[in-house]
Amino acid sequence: MKVANRSCMARRKPTERFQLQEFTNPSGNSSWRVSGTRPDGSRVRKNFTRKADALQAQAEEESAADGIPNQRQLQRTSLTPQQLSDAETAVRATPHRPLARTVSRLTDLEARAQARGVDLDAALSFFESHYRAETTVISVLNARNEFIDTRVGLSPKTLIGYKSSTGLLLSPDPNKALNRFTVADIEAILARYANINTKKTHRRLFSVFFGWAVRHHYCLENPCDRLDRLPKATTHISILSPDEVKRLLTAAIRYHDGVTVAGVAIALFAGLRPSELLDLQAGDINGERIRVTGGKMRRKINRIVQIPPNLAAWLKKYPFRGLPGGWNYKMKRLKAATNARSWVQDILRHTSISYQAERDKNEGLTAFNNGTSKQMMDSHYRNVIDNPAAIKAYWALTHSTLPKNIEVALPADDKVTWPTRAKLTKLVWQKPMMHLAKELGVTDVAIKKHCVKVGIELPSQGHWQRVAR
Image (cartoon, rainbow, N blue to C red; front, top):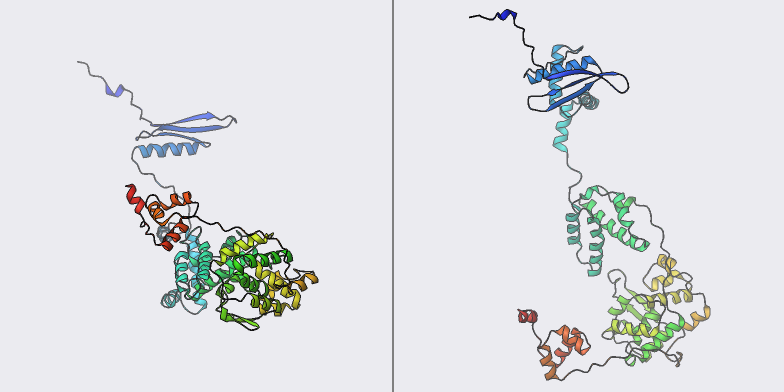
């Protein structure tokens, strides 16, 4: 048997997983590419401009494939082995910040402490034992609810105003910390409104809210204190023309036997607010004066209004015994009969103050008599009327001087022909109230009132839902 001579056999080349290839770029320069497959099946394809970098990358890939850990490259340093060890420990202790910045910050703090004659540890110890937070963090929603709960004794209308204005602070984030509100936040809210008076109202209520928050240590300052001053509002008010005044008084005389005349005359010639007129009692009118104690100013100002001669003549003919029932409804009827070009809530008061200002030529006196301010007079009532004859005629207007040939179209009172009591009793139990109201041409409220008046028992709430089941 022949035995092969092993010494003559060729030695097998070691297997290379990653190949190094040279190629030419479109620019004409040579580059080297390392390509291959890792043990996990992932492909490697890397290009290098230097052959030395490509050889090192090939060696690293081969070593990693053979499970040999990568050896760090040696770098020159002036640090001693102990200093290198300390630096590595410091880097591991502050992995998310540059070591140089950390050392610089610490050195600065130590210098500041030493300037005060203490070391850094003593300064921190003093801070920890004496520090108290300047503000208590609270969301704007919780602060607003707490603030509303403290508004005790306010009128419902004023409370609604506080709720409405502070509610604007809740958008877009009711959980925003109150101490994070800035001047820019308040300006952004006020910028939504074009009317200067609306801006002033919200700004005033914001200031009250943040002032309360400062006192309760929920924020450091009131951002409203640093807002720019709003421009002065100089709006033109709406008043009735002389012809419209005459039509209004004529309609009041002819409507329901003059039941509204006294109230209309007091509003036109004494300048009471609608809310003051609603609170006025017969006992508040005494001789030549009207004592105003009600209305929205009742907690601040009680005033005496002098009764001018023409108003005295009206009250002598139509004594004031309190406003009649359904006053607002009756005023809507008179408004329609007056056929005024414009009609706002305080138009009778605006008319009265405008004529008073031109009659007295004393804005301070007129403001005092009407429970307002001179600033309001300057803003709204300056030079509204420029016809001396119209002013004189206005204050001479009485029942006897009112022209008798004025035509007004008072809406006719709709008379409802109600079914008999027995038939109506049957109808209200046959169908829902809203359907019956359409058949009779009235409202469901009118049917309920009439049924109560004639003593008809009505179905209980939810009756028709139970019948439909």
